[in-house]
Length: 458
Image: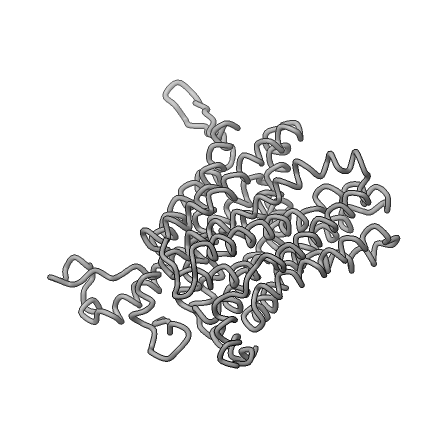
């Protein structure tokens, strides 16, 4: 693996390993309500609406916090922001054990949600240790820290049985605080911050960090992430209910089948980063969207009974997916979504190398909001249509919109770089025309010298 000037391979492995471990712990904490929330609901006698709001609050704040945590990480560096974010979150988790009223629980949940904001802190910190040819792989490995949700699902129930939900919360708080101290002691200041200190440069202003958010390209990346991450989080919580309602399965079986979707959606993110480095993030996004469109189209088709007027009388036949086929489709969907998550964040440090925190924060925020709003949309569609597959129809529409937007934007960039294409219907009609470079690899050719970010040609 190539290294940046003054950065050793050991430095890279240290930064990547510490960031991935810290993110895994943070993600485990972020999803703690999925286990202890049931006990809290019983103790406080909460309604389903109150319980839903309590569980959703950390998801919401974990998403919104990414924008300002990203800006602050660009200003002060991940070695400062990561431990600070973890310590504040640990205090909020510990305070859960002394809360008596629902309203204060919501306030504590707001602080707990900061654990979800750790993602952009780690992205901004990790990306600075690697050259652009290897950032995709590094960020993919880092993003696999999503597996922290599985850690909570497997470990927290045993902790609740042994120590109660209050004891479980204290153990999580202690583990998070210890991780914060460990990170601060072992991590090194990233190369960009080290250079600023050496030259006496002050922190970059928040205004300049937010400047790239005016580019429509940034919001296009955010719509990609709304699906590959937001829909991933939404489906992880919706699928158990779907299996129980649509197929009449036991909850335990439904949970296992939903886990078969969630697991590839986390662990293959590193593969997506490697593929983005090797073939370009644009190619991986096309793969993600095309496969998702096919899979979601099939999943969207409701159980249907057809009656045909035959020669000798009515002929009836049914169409529908068996539970085995449906589970297989969700595994495929989770796999390509994990590739897409890595591909989206491969784009950002290449196009906006000096604004990874702010741009990545916005993209992560929009993606996280998908995990908050999509389940609500699923419920509205189920109530309005009475069709179990309606949520997959919504996801199909979102992917179709993102695919069209991406393809149109790419064609416009190609024609801007190769004017001969403007009057041609097909690329193959242009004799000897050079092939366009992948989006992630071509950014340097479109970045004016002396600027910190590529200027999108859309």
